[in-house]
Amino acid sequence: QSALTQPRSVSGSPGQSVTISCTGTSSDVGGYNYVSWYQQHPGKAPKLMIYDVSKRPSGVPDRFSGSKSGNTASLTISGLQAEDEADYYCCSYAGRVVFGGGTKLTVL
Amino acid sequence: QVQLVQSGAEVKKPGASVKVSCKASGYTFTGYYMHWVRQAPGQGLEWMGWINPNSGGTNYAQKFQGRVTMTRDTSISTAYMELSRLRSDDTAVYYCARDVDWLLRYYFDYWGQGTLVTVSS
Image 1: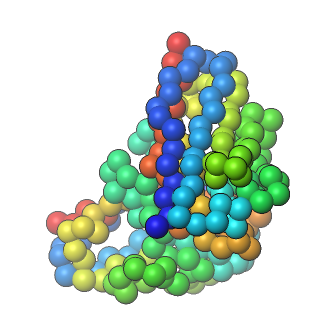
Image 2 (image 1 turned 180 degrees about the vertical axis):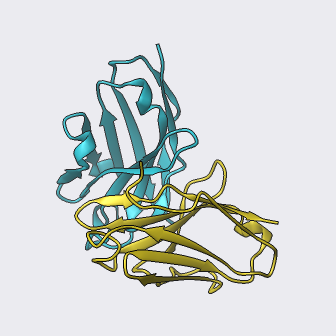
Image 3 (image 1 turned 60 degrees about the horizontal axis):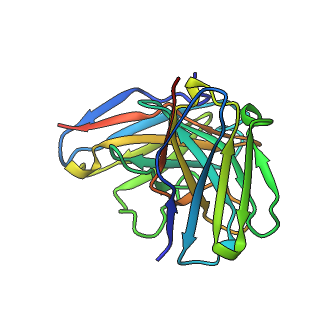
């Protein structure tokens, strides 16, 4: 069982927005701003999309945004595109690194 | 450009050991921590630990302590991860991943292509 809880799947149509949640505890997500998100296409290595809860690495489109409220972090993807279809993992560091179980995003 | 190139797939018997390499290029190898993350088939990501390529210092996830050893060879900019006493549930793709900052931030900005380790009798 993963330390961080994510929905198994979400879906949306092109152009729409979707939000993926990541629920932890006050000892990880809620207690620190060390939350990141990774995108993984089938058979590929993960790609860093968000770090420090809401910062985007260079090259990541501003359609991707992150936020946090209490013990739950969220990744929002606006203006969905076909290439956004992938698995998404949240990650938190609080003395140890913990990942969420992953969410499969389907673009309808 | 930054590249991490890992060694090829391995098939091992239960109880054996495996050593995966990760050759870095395009940046100063000793300037960034290197992490190892694994992913079992159809499963999520699992952090295994890091090595400081400059000092050789390591920090392992509690789950792997006593079974994992991370080393490096700075002369060839290569990090290694050795896992011993392999079990069938160690079957996974093993990734090396560079930390984003020399300060150790636990964010992973560049990843190797992954090495599939299959443990089977």
